[in-house]
Amino acid sequence: MSICGWVDCCEDEQLRLLRGIAAAERAGERDYRGGWTFPTEQPMWGRVAFFAADGRAGYEDRVREVLERVAALPAVDQDDRVRGLFRVSHEVDGATEWRLRRGELLCVPAPPEYDYLDE
Image (cartoon, rainbow, N blue to C red; front, side, top):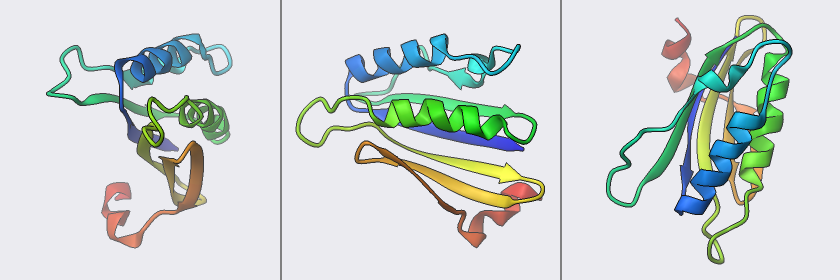
């Protein structure tokens, strides 16, 4: 199975908290935080982190837990919450889309127009 996506933070503090979550989490014996990428230079006002990793079935449960914590990061202002989009591709179960928005992680079937990503 494969997980790939990004998180868009509104402020430096949210990005700092995300870095801390990523650094602290482990999956079994292997540290998966290597799947996180934090660009050293962020363009303009953007604060983005990327995640991509392949794993065995069940690995997505641990990543989902981490992303639920990320989604729950406090808002900077009234509605400035982190947001993001992840595609989870599974050989047996097909693809799902994980959406970080409004403080939650929503898991929905992936739209068919992106099936080419699994070919």
